[in-house]
Image (cartoon, rainbow, N blue to C red; front, side):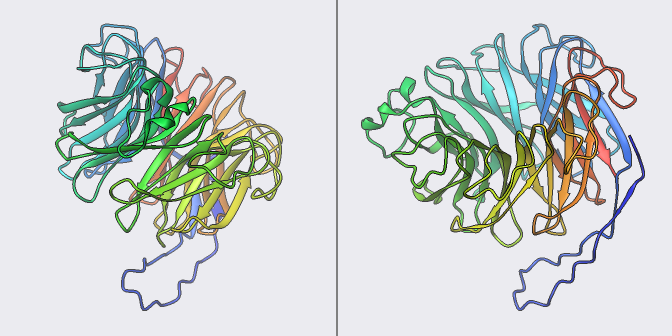
Length: 446
């Protein structure tokens, strides 16, 4: 892998604005592709990183899951998946790590740092023992509130007899929490929603499911949205007006869903602060689109990332089998622009963050060595992209080895670098020694 290759960017001129709240956007002049540091963590089993944040002390918190009982894992007795939270310093050194779960399959998906310096983590869990106090079926939505050292302050499980997953969490303006995922409404027999009738039990595999909690973890309200097929929310942000915008995908074309484009679409739902739906929009072509993450932009809009197989309708082009697809919409759901990135193989985007300059950092996966992806190191690589505010590509870079390696989340650090997380299954991944079947991997790029 070439390191130290410089990508020279243009200077973005920002006009004066009468809006005192307008961000002061100063584009970076130089981005270096050099790896500042790379760390892998795990044991002899399987590990994956799903979410990363920069903490108030300048370090990082990473959430994923692990089924190892050795290596970097201490005090874990059962070889089943547990939530795994790692606290790193600014140089990627492990300060502490903790697992949360029970005797069954529990998988962490999203971490945030709360206003008091502690953490909230969500995912989906099957356990009703260990750290989990309740389970109603297969997987339930499981949220834990932690102090600054990872000790459990409270935990709550929400679900019914089917598979119910949560993928993203935010702390709300009122100090509470909101998390998004999906509900198997057929198995819940129509329960799990404030304000809808039992006729919706005819719905099928999944519904967007949004849950609002008070600061102490008690339930404030929850609502589901969707149609008769498979609809799943993967990301959520809070809008400037206090409402919530959930993004994911939909296979349905009925009930809450209108103006569909193909077999699977990006589907975005905005609700007010009480959960009443304000609007819903579908984006895509006649093929398959899956949205995995959403970020709020500096101008109050939203960027959504995933992948597309289409070449028509909302999708301007496709470079190969599947492309990473990035779209921007305004606060009313109007599509402002869309961009596809990829080569002749399979690409997908899993995480998107807004940068200080108003552009976007994207974590994804690539199997191509042509088109927008200039290098492929093996079967599947972590793929890092950075764009300007209009979605134009200014940097891309692949990381991996000869086997399967996946990227799931990224952030821009306070020093203007990027940190990418995921899982590695290659023994020839950079200069790392693989500890097990797959390891959790963290890469800092200058």
